[in-house]
Length: 428
Ligand code: HAM
Image 1: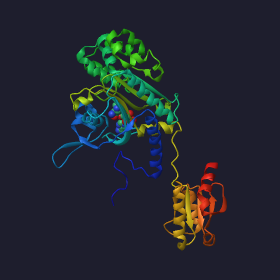
Image 2: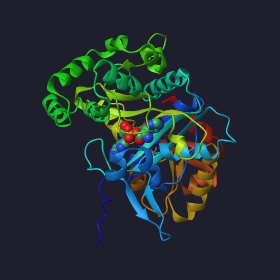
Image 3: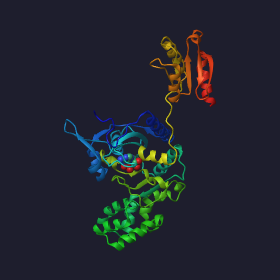
Image 4: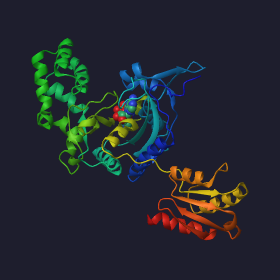
């Protein structure tokens, strides 16, 4: 026998789990649509090259699911959506009126060791703006994150948006910490792991690539000073940073400046941000994003800057669960129409049809069972109502409407049934 379990690191979504996922993402779609974002989609298979060029080594060398098709083309299952959407924008730039606001909801595959918050397949909400360098993009993207989080029921004490700027960090390293240019990339990668690894280990790694201990300690001190370090940066760096501009304006409360935010993907050029859960039980990054000024440059000579974020369902579900915000699965139907004999099946279908005309979700049995059993089934499926079609009542085109939640029932003419059922439904 073959195993019935899904491939390691992927999940089946049975109807109850699917219902939860659908509700969460439905809420998020509504939130981003309130900001004017429109949905797009694309293929799960892409040319492997689009990740190898700019996503960075971790994704390209270790995490890509790659294959060669029968024509010898090197393909990959998308590990993320940003290179694909940059391709679509570049390919359609002449017919688009930039800037555009786009969102998608896609599954992504990464070959990782499955663990809490990390699987091999996850679903990601992607929200991006293309075609503007203005700080208004940062402000709007941060506002969208706040809108999405609050629409899910999360309050400000549950999470924090931390943002840094790669150009600022580069200047902190070169101009303030006086780190030689050739050590800057490796120092950045060290900072990306700053809070995940013991300080001594980081110090040892720094020494290994040529940074002396005292310089490392000085760097640690500078980084610990948070936004204070900004006053020590050259003016052109400060003026060129959207985040620094935001810190003087009305949008400063949307985020906390954190020079330690670097993020793993190579294509980010300035603003980078991550949302963290503040619960001690789930103290981790939930999702993130950033500004990428030339990813579209893979596909076109026209410069099309982008900024946005990707929010995964695995980390989000952990967050919602930790804070008691996971929605309940939706019930399958509102009402079960139950005929008491096989001869009454057509009558039951007629009653069900009538209810469906009023947008009531209704099921009818596929096989005849005892009334008691059908009522138990209806109750277990979460149906609020049972509509019993009996021989005698049907002769007068009447049925019994039973409110399963309140254990009450009434005899009712079928043309009055839909309105009555809807009234009861709204009462409690
Ligand atoms: P990322 O940080 O690689 O960025 O992934 C974004 C989010 O996707 C993560 O924070 C996490 O919620 C989820 N995620 C990623 N990998 C996994 C995994 N193996 N298992 C479960 N969840 C995962 C990007 O992908 C960028 N393309 C996002 C972006 C959009 N930047 C700009 N626009």
